[in-house]
Length: 243
Length: 318
Image (cartoon, rainbow over all chains, first blue to last red; front, side, top):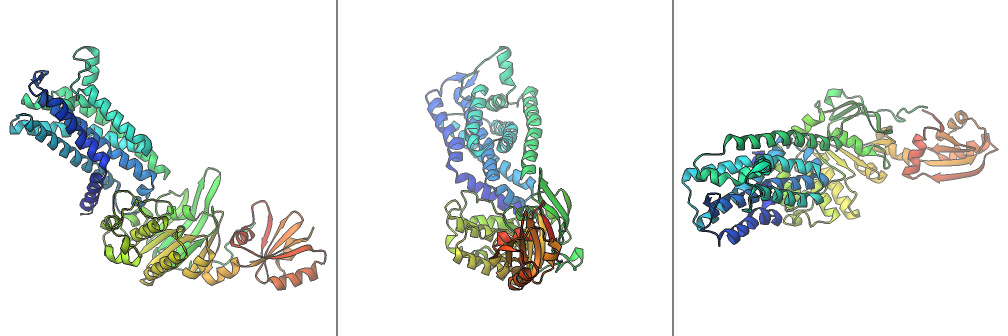
């Protein structure tokens, strides 16, 4: 009950922060219509371009939604709000859970909006296809949610906004979210396939093919999560031992 | 040199488990600086106690340790028989920290309601807004408050918890005179319900007017602990300074009306409970005394007189 009420206020704060709403929801929608609109008949890596670009932009917006939780964390700890919360019965687990769940709710909204936008440009997927794509996107976001918590304890609030913007755009670009592929073969392609954002962008193609990701995709997501999680825990400990 | 509590532990006779706060041998240092030195303190449920001391006395460090925000180097803390983190988790303790700003994008009422939701038995939000005088700010974004207003909101956040023990760290720093009066009226209302209140302040008047008992801290040490009236008399004592080479501090310290005697070079400083009696006795027994001056001690000076510094000779009469 406590956690639900707390989450409600967390969500309220999210929607009152225009930067979150704009960069995670409005921006990818604008880019989607601007780029996919004139290219609705085109095909890209063997699938209709709007289908590809739909999950590309959903990936971009959803990444911003979960990574930007870090800016809230950084703000709250530098303002002394984290200390204030630490003298309430709110547990650390609930604090982080609320942050991650709120980021995921925002990401889900972005993904749903992109799906709706996709259908207006003639994207057709089976019910199972839609579910697979959304499921893959949500799974692929896990390492980015952890990255948000890590950055929130590593950086100051001032450096965090550019860091969130720069990192998510870099991940999105290299992962092919903007419809540009840096490489399609060779060692550079191997590097790109090692990025979690590549697999986010591939979610629609995987869904269209009827399956999910190949094992490779799941391994990449798992490894990034496994590497980032202890770093985030370490950053959190270093932070709280100081206060 | 002796560092015993000058007035004794007025309330230390309660059993340890019954105390709202029981500190035993509490110790904390940051590098070479000792912030809190072997502090023993028992506060019974229902007491309103002030920790009085100048800046750097260790007030905030003590409160942070009681709230579980700072880990002590040594000693123990028990709040109603529980360690701090457990008492916090149970919702029986709440506090108002000295440095904490409010988060953005929530209105005042939402902020207080959010904090209320974290506690098992919160007070009604509107009642707390009324009690803290911020009902008219309920719809105001928390980012658009003056220093005094946000201090009241932070007080509301501590009150809405409906705690058994309320800790306030310099709670009136940003308030004007009227605001202070209102603030303490609310605190009294809370204390009247049998709650335990511990507040830190560097205003003697505040400690005297609103606490039953004053714990005097200086340089991390407890210098005195007793009923507010007694501490006030002691702290508002006067000092006599005189140039008096070679006089034995032991003889000076036992002069009538003298609490303690210090020496810095050729000059001696007598902290007095009765400056007139002390002055007569001083001039009678030490005709060589010159450059004699009598001063009303401000709080800062009183602390210096009470604690001395480590490299000074110092004697206390009791």
